[in-house]
Image (cartoon, rainbow, N blue to C red; front, side, top):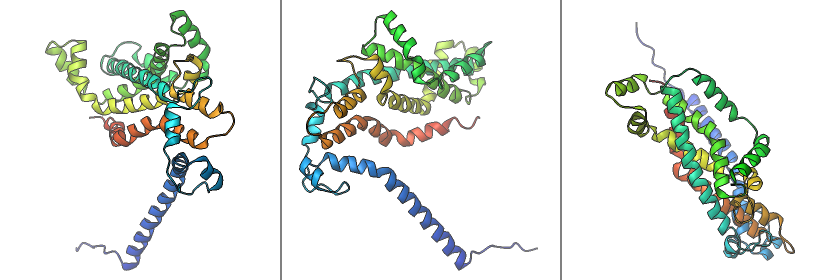
Length: 296
């Protein structure tokens, strides 16, 4: 009995080529539509006001100027202050970096305990923490404000760090728990037999294996914290506001001539850190999401 070898016909090859080019065309249209607002923001930020008023929204700048960027960074008014985004940018850095580090470490520890150190009620605790991920931000505003007042850190950057750490623990625990359940329990048992304790196993075995999920968690937490507006506007005051609150103040507190180029430059400056994080570490984010998808 002879094997039948399938040889594609000329028409089938043409159909596959047409389908492939059709798919590329569709994806190109989607990408163009998705990136069009960013293109408008960037070109507008490089134009002067006269060109913005006279020209087309989609036209390239006839004469590139960086003055809107300088104004947005160090001269735009956010109410009675005209320091631009610079002080608020550093407020967000001082807020995001420790909040990401603390919530990631606590989430790693929680995931390690729930996944590898089985105890009565572990699934219930994990379910409650998972439920906390879906509680709307608005529900916790009043209780959190009361708690910050009791702790005497209301309106401060440490207070904002505390808020984001608390609200991020549910997500970070979920990420690490789902990653650590893929690590064989025999590894923990062998380490116990060798005399390793709870923290020794975590620091020497699990944490070195956690680089993919650490990257995922850091990117997720940094994006959520940097882009947050509700907690920033609710739990901060003058001098401690993050960059998202300052951006809102620049756009909405303008008097006289509306400087669209400054507004666009300020919006891009506020979005640059998260954009750079995804550009630099985006592929590691995808690898980390799929690293714990198969157990074994």
